[in-house]
Length: 109
Length: 118
Image (cartoon, rainbow over all chains, first blue to last red; front, side):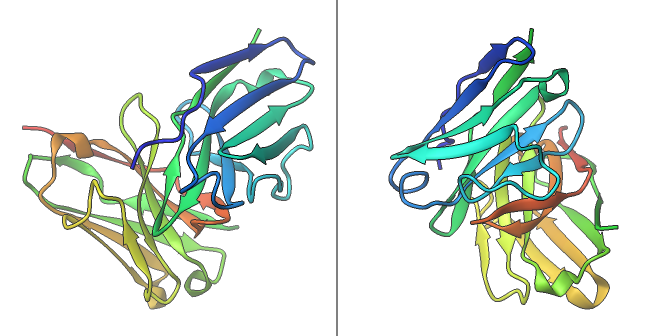
């Protein structure tokens, strides 16, 4: 059960937009519209930011948006803020289970 | 307030066993699927096991299949993970979370640490 592939790190200046990619296969990301994104600050539990590719849970800023094309999903953070500095993980459903991404460290310069 | 609280972590020798618990509050526990996720030190998240609200559907990651058993007691609003034949690579923070594998995990506990070492 190989993890989904994410870039190790992405950085941006306050106010800029950044995009994190999440690449899987036709058995997971490409096969279903069931991609989620999580934010994790050091020493804290993950927080759901996006579900079902592009839906935001109540309370999550609209600066966070998700999309998918083929086997690759993406998370875009617009108007980057200092509080967005964290680790981000994608996740996808696959038959009889799920898989997380390798994680991306977002740094606000 | 919707909350999950894990307990039962600790230090165990390779080959040993441990039982984790997760106490749920603030929501109708029996109506929700639950999941265990773990995170090895300095590593990413790894899905471990899933159980539906009525316990009729259960899944395990290949890495724990045959060694770990997930269960729940809806009368006590509790989720469990019985871990056996523990290996060094099972060392991790174990989180319980609410949700469906398909639609994301919307509530997480604070995690409990399991260390497998001689």
